[in-house]
Image (cartoon, rainbow, N blue to C red; front, top):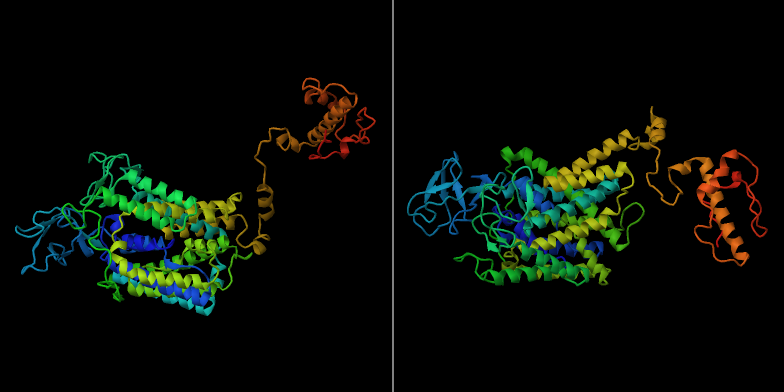
Length: 617
């Protein structure tokens, strides 16, 4: 149950609903593609690799698939739909002529004529009188690259990934990536996913320049999706409305999202199995109670019209297009990025899983990892054929290990359950963003916490590239940019510090000078008088050690005389004892004696070392 949340989340992302747009990929198809590809890949993980892990759609890659490759919000783009406007037209398909001058609505197939209108300069749709969308101001937007071409790139990436695994090149390629960059990539993905979840709750909303984002104290978002300081919608933090015609095109109810986050977080803290699923259903059912209206109704609401139905693909299955034409360059770039993200993402996940399950060796590898990688590649290939982005091993699978799963039988059972879930696609495709946002935030926390401790933050040559990787991912909404920035930073930092090729660079000019200048200097201040900057002076080191021994001996002598316990005022101070120090040479061998017959033999200052502990009282 822990991994089943992907059946709720992936349709929202790939269909574009999480961003208030439409990519042309129906939610129903994405649910089926996710369930079937997950079932096949997880079955292979259990039968071939014998690991109790679930393989499903990689979070982060699906977001990259939509917003960096398909690039929605394009006027008259591929698979155009009305972005907003009246409830009748919003979300319905629309098409444009080649010159972009005419838009015609295609959502009324029962009519004997095709209503059409003229595209206004601002991109709005002006229909003729008597048509279903007459007078609408809805924008007709689509994607720059059709999803069919992006799925073809995903399919090819899966085949190449399998070839890398079968030929044994995976381990050689993996050695080229330092562990710090891999762990930073995992941390960055966690921060990125949590940021998406905060927008889905929604706690964060767009703000005017220069802030760009702000707390959802007031919703000042126009139809363009950007913050507008002069726009006053009257929707505030304590509001709870269903936005069907304006961003976020879903439920806007921050207090409900935070309540779902708190509820799900408590279940997770108590180690309740299926905490994510229970959290999603909790928030979803509350949203149905607050907005008791059906989808497509008047007024529209979040409740699906049916809960169980026979699975059937309508659009995405087998819809691969290799006729890339003017998009060839962009799709080749996408193919390389998919391969990189799949390879690195799988490696990061495997390292994280191995770390959590206690099977990671000193080289950062796990046994039979090549067989597990084959399961990932197989899932990605099938996912591309059916209609979803790349698959990888789920970090949440560690919960199965926690509950006693130790063999591939656990994965086989999970695969069967995913196959059965295809009959519940109406529910999975109707989950509102506000119900999945809390889960995204908590998943981001889990991914981040399992990897951040593996980064040596005390070493600036490792911490710098790691931090750049994390922050670039979160601020650019692009995982690829973060990984590329981190690798470039790592190469530059290690090169200039003679650490990129240590065996060769230690012979280069300037190596010894760098080692001298870069010697580690302690910046800690020790208030007890030891280990501070003054302790570097040999005389002060010896004086401190002598003072410790002298004070201890003084206390012992006072006790032996059966006198009262000495007070703080009766003990010799450091200032009073240090008065006689200048008369002694720093290298003198003349002993400083304590008038105590029971004390240790005389000790000279030359024999004392910093760190010698005073005798116990």
